[in-house]
Length: 121
Image 1 (tube, rainbow, N blue to C red):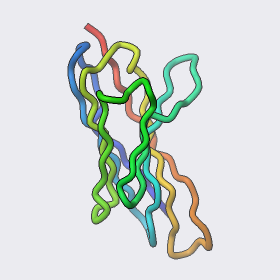
Image 2 (spheres, helix red, strand yellow; image 1 turned 135 degrees about the horizontal axis):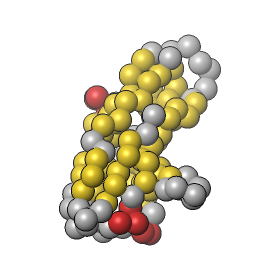
Image 3 (cartoon, rainbow, N blue to C red; image 1 turned 135 degrees about the vertical axis):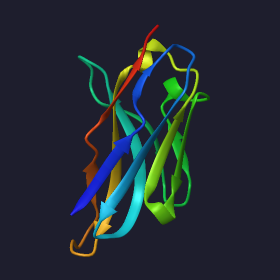
Image 4 (tube, rainbow, N blue to C red; image 1 turned 30 degrees about the vertical axis):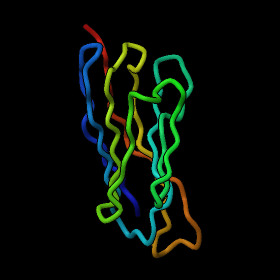
């Protein structure tokens, strides 16, 4: 009932930038918190950043000052601007959104398919 489609991953050199996008679609009544997680090989999935519908943000310590999360509520889209990328940022990045649909009685968490970000020279 809800689909999250991510875009913007790729290969970038250390110090470079990438911008990820994630658009939610379907029978959406309300999108609450939206966020980005990442999972590197052999590691657990971790929160990178999230943002409430009101615009309050939260960042992992490892990305503070380098990454910026934003959203367009009219488009149900969340963005992650990643600057000063480091090799340790290499991971699959997943979009997550808490969404209440017109059918369900309560919000549920939905995940995107993931997009690979590789930082390497």
